[in-house]
Image: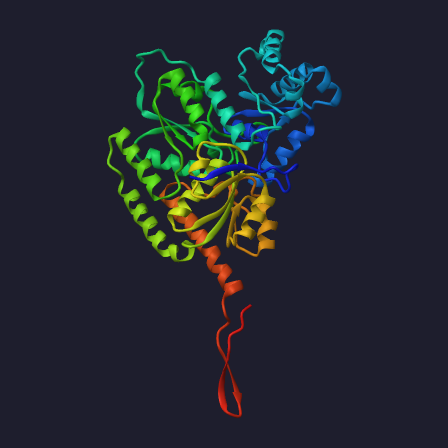
Length: 460
């Protein structure tokens, strides 16, 4: 059991965590025709928007209530009203998702009350879904913002179901954590559909941020799950929650609609995917397709091939709690040692991370621990690249944001195939590092008076 501690530094140096409102806005981006709206200053929105655009290399819709110093002190009703009306008139969204920020939470704006007054004053907004989530950025982190926003979506947008109402056994709700990429969601959708089931993802980033080019420009999100489909999620036979952060939303779904749920805290690794595939076979009543038996064999073979390179490695991992738990558990099973583990916020899974200690801190803490404990592989998001360079160890990018490499939205770690590709990528990093920095050059020969002599290899 890991000991969870919190950094006592007066300030964050090279931050690891991203803020709550950004996590909340990210969740709204998985809805079709959505416009995420941050209730705060323009800088709050432009910072988050920059991260999203650099990560996905796509046009990302986000708006702001543009709170000034004066408006913040006096109250933000007029700014919220004007922002909603402008968005409604100019972009015709199917839904507006509103997340608070630090300045408006400090003032204590009653945004739910604002929304009621705005609906009373403007009849045209009566049927437009307006979902508000409190996500102050002076506490918690990216994962918390996602968790709260998805739970709020369920509470507001899913229609209640009367007790005794029959559910469709072929329909499955999927509540994915923020650590899953659009590529992960595509893989999960394929797996679930191969068992004859019809999944509904909330949110569905694979529909909106998977990098496809739409037929025509739209100022809102270009895909994802629609509000009409969300309303009918209570008719499903099961809910699958991926990541401990999604337990809250799954419980809200069960309480409101009676749909039972199964929580999978991770889907990276052999054993978790065995459990996932077995569960799908059980609820669908179908045998496991031959393709997944073959993929399982490929993963087992990949684990044999790569354990020589990954086993015994000392790892330094910095990530949101669910991603940290997912990656560290899989790599521990591969024989690696998680010598340094740093995360962003509290979570029930942290005590089960296979490490002596999990520190809630920043990338400076991660670098210091990696150096002190002799780590030889660093895993975190792109802001960790300077630390890896200073430590002179291989660096694998995982999490958000990833802005100095292409294809972040298609990176995959779930399922047998995703796990297989992940361990190959990690093993190849280790091989390349050894070849470039730690391996002797081939022996050479020189002619002397005594004949041929071997010149000893020189280390780089």
